[in-house]
Image (cartoon, rainbow, N blue to C red; front, side, top):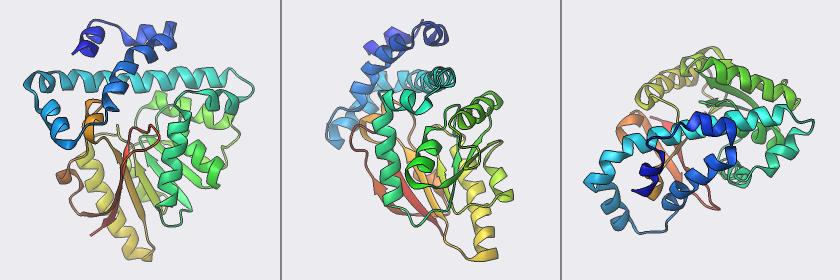
Length: 260
């Protein structure tokens, strides 16, 4: 696999610091592979190939690092500019984010407060939910550096009254008011997150019996080259009510759940 040979001995952090465009070019090869339009039989054949399977842990780890590194660099660029929306909207992947947010909103019950587990250092999802739909948002991340950068970005966009960023994990949701939750595709560990969410939602429903929207992002088809998909055993206690495959170049499949 050419992509693996290209990254295995390279320091992605150094590349991100010196040349973000080069980082995008390196991962564009993986992006092209993930967006190949192949049927499920061929996809399964590729993903089950022993050589590919042996490389997947390293590829997934590099993708996770890439995702974090490019968000950090983009966040810093935004913070250095007086017009943050201009910088964000010029970002090549911005249309994918916008499509993903529009799709989730159109397929959700009315959302007043959205909690996002794994918001990262540049909370594009929350910025867009606030800008496009006026939804109040809570971003949660366990990485203190990501939290600090996300808070700075929210303040720079002038949205600190609409978006709160909190350091911690999914257990923080038991102390907060929200009626919809989104789990990031790279948030880990999935089994614990869903188990704790199930407990929290059960308690919330018992206390006020209000509907709670649950959605998670995952990778399906050839996009499983990017990262591990969420498995059925991860979401025990939840019932799948809708699944929307990616469109318009998006990477994530959106899966909507309800608590059993």
